[in-house]
Amino acid sequence: MTFAKRYLRVTHLLFVILLLIQLLPDRSTKEVFTGSLLTFAVAAEVVVLAVSAFIKNEKSLALLLDIAGFVYVVLSVWSLATAKFNVLNDLLFPAPGKVIHQFVDDRDKILVNVVSSLGTTLKGFLLAVVIAVPLGLFIGWSARVGGAATYITKFFSSIPPIVYIPYGIALLPTFKSVSVFVIFLATFWPVFAGTMSGVLGVDKKIIDSAKVLNVGKAEMLFRVILPASLQQIFLGCNQGLSVSFILLTSAEMIGARDGMGYYVKYYSDFGDYTRTITGLLVIGFVVIGVTFLFNKLQNRLLRWKA
Amino acid sequence: MTTNKIEIKDLTVNYTENRRSFNALHNVSFGVADGEFVSVIGASGCGKSTLLSVLEGLYAPAGGSVQISGKELHGTGTERGVVFQHYSLFPWMTTKKNIEFGIKQARRDIRRSERAKIADEYLNKVGLSGFGGKYPSQLSGGMQQRAAIARALAMDTEILLMDEPFSAIDPKNRVILQDLLLKLWEGDGTEPRKTVVFVTHDIDEAILLSDKIVVLTAHPGTVNEVVNVPFDRPRRRDDLVKTEEYTRFRNRLLSLLYNDIAERIGGDEVVL
Image (cartoon, rainbow over all chains, first blue to last red; front, side, top):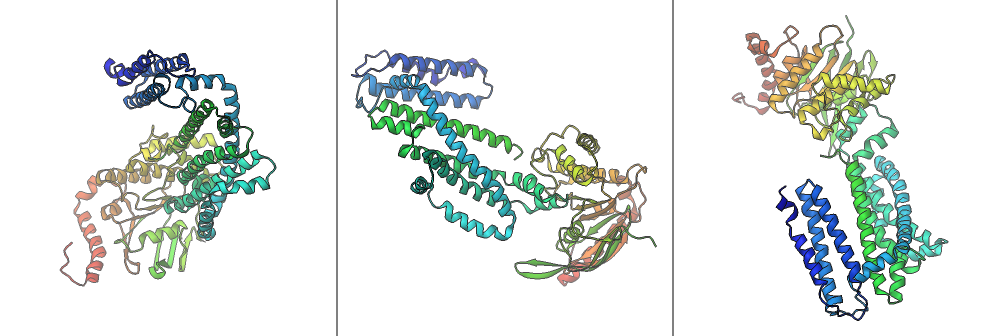
């Protein structure tokens, strides 16, 4: 890549505009923490420049620059609408610098809540996967019950898992266990259904190929049928994972004592909208991070696919 | 009289499709001697692949018997190595792992480290050294079939069953693969040759490779004739196809194959 292609990009112009906007006088009645915003923006730009110096792939560079550009535009518009011209209610809409400042201030509390939310999700999700996959393999492979199981699964997976919450509260001792239970249900059915449809869809030629090698029963299930249906299993897992986050945060807003849903709900009850927005953004980043890692795992395990 | 390695007697196979049962093979009988290369040819739908699935142990016959080394055939078994037209290899295992898996299944006494060595050796034999770490999807169709042959050979089974292994390969690579199989099977004379049943619809392929050709007739599949291939080994394609004998023999097979079809269509003016 030429120097111009690498460094002379619109994104950097957007960064400069964001800085220039900060030179305008503040009109908000509240504190706006321009310093925090500047620190964040400069740090982001330094990272972007450093990465662009080493990146080899032109497409990845474009992706990075587009995302950074988007962030700069959002921050620019946001700070114009709040700190600079104060056209929005400054109680409901904190300035960007204020949210960044709040995040840094609250980092320990946020970390505790994120860890709590992730722990709950992981428990429910993993429990569901560990049970649903072998069960789906086994039942899907016993083709006799495969058909009936498909209908039963359709029935149960059509019940929105959120309606289990009141019953879960009556059934289980702690709110945490209710969250785990609901996430378990939300993940179990799509993963189970995905595994079964994966098993039922395995090419007969692959099964014949395994049969003539005289593979044993367990080996057939876990070394042949499992990898052959892995893509469908991941489809179910992805669905389960995205529903899990929706459910978890909803559940946490109902009655939990920690977790990101609780953080957002708790502070919005007190009218602390800076923390509310901070919480929203953190949830977004956590979900995107988990999804990213999960996709990495998926690509790794399915790297043999053409 | 010597006993055959594979003895098929009055084999009848019924196939059910859309709840209608039809007779795929009817009273098929022939034998394959130890170390013999036998091809089964016939028009599509004549039941030649069905015949092979019975030998593979994947399909149970309705009548008759199949004996292998004097014992009645029951289900699949690793004394028979199989090469299919597609998906002989597991797509989620690398080429080398596929071969190692085959060795593990067929030769339980061989250790893991030894398996890797044997796998490399056979990859080398089929011209795939350096491709062991690739997944099947990263290889061309021809290379996948080379790997499938390497696995079948590495399993060191007494019998090889090959179901149209080169049918999906482009003409140029098909020729290369046929020559490779011929060379590997004929060997250098130090080791006993494997017993092979090879299904194909390619007459030249059948003549080049086989000691004996079983010609099937369709609807239901019956044996039209079993023909001995009169050419000496080791064979070379170039020498073989030039001879007048070859042309005559090939024509005879063609008439066996297609007269049957011509009769069925009901006209003798069918041009082939």
